[in-house]
Length: 151
Image (cartoon, rainbow, N blue to C red):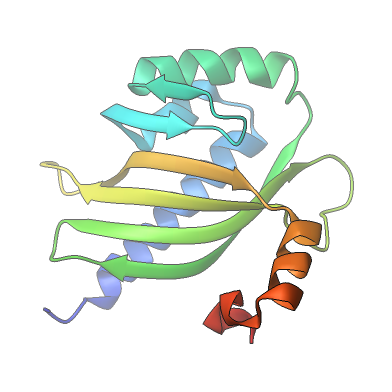
């Protein structure tokens, strides 16, 4: 595996910051701009959006309705590069109003690609709601299921 340039890590972190900033402004166009034209976007309820336009239009509606006034918290857990043109980012996040939640209830996976213009963009996004009680039961009944990061 090739060594990863600090510039790539910085560029991926900047991409994630643009994503959060666009959400903060409820700017559906800016939010969509961080995705590839053919991106897929899977919500925690299982809705699958296909393509940048679908992501933009759905978020335009969400920002004016269900998600109006929300902010987005996201903490990067891991960035892994696969060659010079692709990366996977795992994070924990959540939407919120008011005070930022102490525990973030969702786990996200972002598949990133470096496009022809040299910019990193999100090609696929998957969001999963955490079930802490179910995790705790599973960990207690089967301690071998506890992820290394949580031991």
